[in-house]
Structure formats: structure tokens, C-alpha cells
Image (cartoon, rainbow, N blue to C red; front, side, top):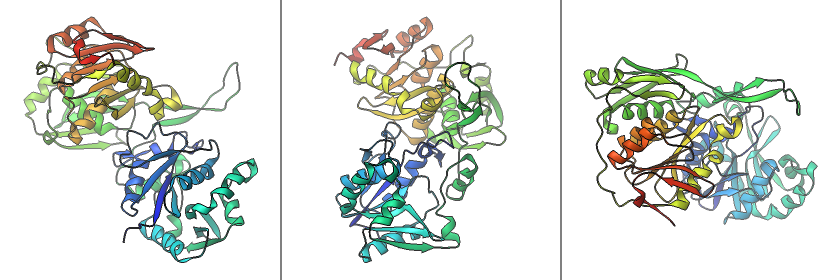
Length: 458
């Protein structure tokens, strides 16, 4: 299918997802949030693609090369995203697609767009069984004044009412194509994602019945999922890790790096995750004796699985200062933004976050119920994507003890920072191996315990 050059595309994200309990755009499929995969799909068809959302906090570090437009009209639903997308577009017509419609394929998009190119209409949308689908449609920029007038009245904020007021053409779909215009709205709809993606990670939260004593009554609360996942390497069980059921591949990859089993992504032949059995299996290009030796160093804790024993794993001092520098203000900004960037924390308040910054901005971010797990996910992602961590900083919300220092040293990360406290053992290890250790990075305060030359005042 040829690319569309004179019509741009906008992906609509940011619905309240009340029936799902989790932002749909952040459901993880094929190793990335749904919004990322949908943007990739649109970029293959359109020269110009943007993403519209009421709040871009979750997505800014994930969607590269695509502008993220924050809706000018908050709490206005899809209509707010459409008017904002039209105002920021530099094409006369814009194709809009809801992020939670993952089955809409190229032929459906092409049929709607081509009709919009031919027809003398202000709006062209898909239609199924006589029902218009306004979130798979092309709108003209000339509709902005009409949309803004409609947004002034609460009862007019439904896009279908716009279609009744303006010159509209519909493209009818039936049979299999009609089924592809369904959206993901509840947990029962999640199997739809499996029709479009090979790996669909479980929902990380659950709606749980609750009775509140005192205060306003509520019937359901959003609670984080916690799974015991058994981790194996070449058939040898390493540990059972208590974790969220998302990012498990990254988690076990980072865990293997933490144990000193892998240093390069080529050493990880495969990672298989069985969600039903709650089991993750690594196939590593390492000797079995090395794996068995690593198991002897393991003890478990409520934050995942940690190394602590009569001897530390083999570590190497960082090679000088590497020339990496980071400002105090950047560390504070990174740490303070972690929670707002974490969708599970935003819904549950029950996770730690960890991230990797290259000194300019956060490039990798994960969250988990355990601070160790969150850090392992970041490291595992970097390992499998070939990201050089030797010129950057790891930042986290959790306290920094010896295990957290080891995780950073394994990947030659020069700076490790947290909003929380540090332990004496962490300080000793950081001093010995040349790591810059930062604690209490919050409220304009930054405590640099070791190698302070890497942290500049501004």
C-alpha cells in the first residue's frame, strides 16, 4: 500500500479506562506499550503522525520521532483529542484512530483515507451495520470552529453528534472487516489483542471489591497484580521472584546480568515466558557450572531476589570517570518525575520505579512492586536492546543497598541515584568500585556519598 502524503494521522490515547482499571495505551504487547505499536503501524502508512492524549507523562520517553500533543480541552473525551489534533496538523485533512482499536488493518485505513481524498465531505468515517465509527475517520481542519463551539456545551461532546451536523460520508464494512473495528474496553476484551500481536502481557492490575470505613463510599479499588514467577536458566532454577506480570523478559534478563551470568545480549539465546504456569526460562550461552555457582549466592526477599553471601560476585572497578557528568537539577527532575510516568503507580500507588537517563532525559523506565525488580527490568531492557549504560545514570524511588549498587556496577553505570536512603554497605561498595552514589534526591536536596565530581551543581 502506498504511503499517504497529503493526509496526516493522529493516534487518540488517554481515555479514563474505568472498566479496565488501566490506561489502554499502556497495555504491553510484543514487548512495548500498545500506543507504541499503534504509532509504528501508522508511521508505515503516513508521512506525518502525531499522538494526542490528555497527559503525555506515560509516553514521552517511549514514542520517539512523533510529536505528543496534549489535549487543549481536558475531560472532553475523544472530541478534545480531535480538535487538538486538527489544530496542530499542517495538512487539510487528518486521519484519526483510537489506540484501543488494534485490529484495524491497513486495508480498512486505506479505504477510509482514499474515500476522504475523493469525496467532497468534511468527515469520512467507517460504518458497521449502520453504526458510525467516529474514531476511525478522516476529519477536515475546517471543522475546528464547529468542534470548539460544541465543546462549550457538555451535552455536545459526543463525536457522533458532530457527524450529524456536518457533511459526512461513510465507508461500510461487513463480515471479518466489521469485527476488526471492535475496541478493547474491558478485561474480557483483552483476547482481541492476541489477534493482532504474538505476545500479550497480562493486565498488571485488578479491580477488587472494597468497603471503605469512613470517607466517601467506593465499590471497587484498583489493586496491583503480584505473581510468584519461577526463574530458570538452562533448566536450573535460579529463584522465585515476586513481581508484576509485565516486563518479565526484561526482568529475568536483568536478573541474569545481576548474577554475572551475562554481559552481552548475544549470551542470551532466548527467553520464554509461560504466563499460565508463571514461569520464565532463560537459554544462556554460559557454562552450567557458572549458573549453579550463582544459585549458591541467592537469598530471597520481599523485593524480589537478591545476592548476598560470604563473597560478592566478581566485580570490576569503573574505568576512571568516563567523562560522564550530570547536573544536580537533572537528577532531581528525573527522580521527581518517575511516579507521574508510571501508569501502575498512578492507579494503585503500589510500585517502585527505576529509570535510565543519558543525562539529557529518561530513555528507559519500568515499575514493579519491588525496587530490585524495577531496576532489573531497566537493566534487562538495556541489555537486550544493546543500550550502552556506561554514560548515564540509574535513578530509582527505592532505597539503595548493596544489591542495588551491584546491579549498577554490572552494567558499568557511573551514577546511581534515589529519592530514598542509602546503606553503609552500599557506600562502601560504591567507594571501592568508583560509583557515584546519590541519596535523598528530592525537595532540592541531593546527598552525594561517593565520587561527587560526576554531579555538577548546574
